[in-house]
Image 1 (spheres, each protein chain N blue to C red):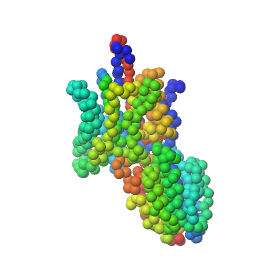
Image 2: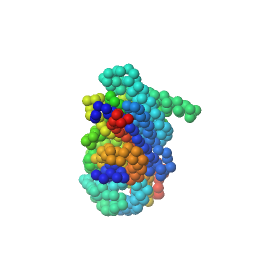
Image 3: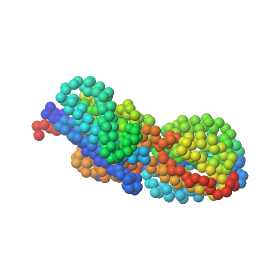
Image 4: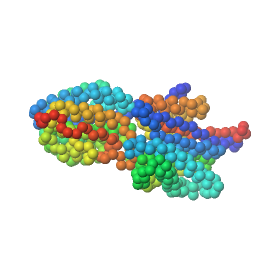
Length: 276
Length: 234
């Protein structure tokens, strides 16, 4: 990278209602939200449970991504204004941020429920009705922050095509079982990965709900998607991929898992500052 | 690699749904036409299974069967796409090695050969009597593998001498009871219900948060019709 160039994080994403939900006339349960700034980007995806015990989980997923984007944005603004060392930021991200996210989500859910219903069951029962997973990334000029609660996938792709999972897969999460924001002490289940300058910056970060990986014939077939997206962006541009993303996800759902599928991509672009 | 217009990633595929019959072929099943009725019931259920599979294209239904008498073995060992599945008649003689049958199934539910992305398998245990081997060890082996614990486990009791306690322990879910079949008509009905209603539920289960459903499986199972079907023959 030349001295007069700068890293810019750009975000695209798409979410499709699963083929099974479409056939049953049910709404999708996934949610997607992102925010781009001058030197940062935030991306969040969430998957509501969609079960009989969680009839409002689509709303729960929507609240989850809103809360994640809001709190990660506040975290980044606080980091900039306080000039705190990376070690302190890392400590906060690992120790405090999960509790803050879960607490804020629960508050928003209870407020939403109170506005919708005169029946106020116990807190645990309310939260269960809105149960959802949450995956989020904050990409900045100083660090990368990944958080995950529940199933789904976060992948990073380097320039040379190397793929990494910042957060290892949780062996407990299979057979459609997931950890959730609605669990008691849910923050204890939230995994956090904080990458600093010692790690080579990835060129692409992919976040997806579990309907995506479940649509591929194998883990290897799924992992190929990361380098493929990067190659497509390099060859045809980010707008091209953004324009086709929904179509590709729909194809995956129709011929694969049948589930709702949401994919978000954070692309690391390098801008020549002299050309600006 | 040409990426013009090409969907990113490798091959896309429906999720495997393994359906395993676990059939009692002990000597008592040779009385009063029970084994013939079981063969007929499973064979007649195949078109209905194919219909359910066709209506749920995101689940690739793969069928096979274990038989047990004095020992247990795979009757149809290869997981067979339901579109190609043909039933081979069982014959009955010998003891009731139910525990060994469950151990055979447990071996096949390990990861691998089971893939992580599979749908919860459906296990249907059909028996008219009591196990004569170490059933507890076999059940422990089955519930000790993750896919065994997450499987949908259904039991059909053929006749009044079937050990309902053993079958309930296999099901391991207080919300699901063994299905009673005391005559050929009832057996056909129970087999058809498992092959259609249960298969349908297993083909598109929702995500389950903490706790899932009772019994470990994450597949909500509708209740079958209550009450006996037809007169008691067995």
